[in-house]
Image 1 (cartoon, one colour):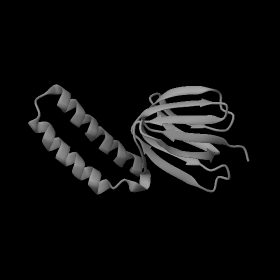
Image 2 (cartoon, helix red, strand yellow; image 1 turned 180 degrees about the vertical axis):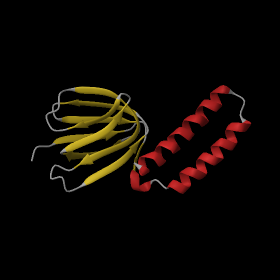
Image 3 (spheres, one colour; image 1 turned 60 degrees about the horizontal axis):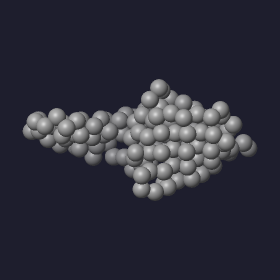
Image 4 (cartoon, helix red, strand yellow; image 1 turned 45 degrees about the vertical axis):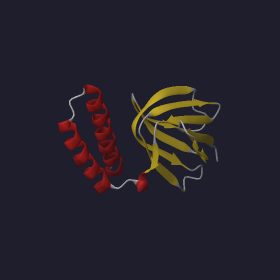
Length: 134
């Protein structure tokens, strides 16, 4: 089976490294699928799901990414993620409660910079829910 290596790192540490037969993720331009021997590629990542399928096609790991970058060359995909979380660790009710609390905070804040930070947190929670439901 043809495969390639996928490495995911955050600012803090290497999160995972595994062989893949297929990688799918969301870029700022839209979804992309990568197979072994893909042409060299660099893109900014958008919030959304990342799926890594094993070379044998018998296992698919799904994660939520909150942004970052991907670089693919020489059969090596390197994902530099802002945040990565296994999709099964996301709880819809927790995210919905977080959104409601953040909306309350947003009403009380008058500084634009703080509003922007809270709005980004709301967007991340909404995208986590969307990733589970898609």
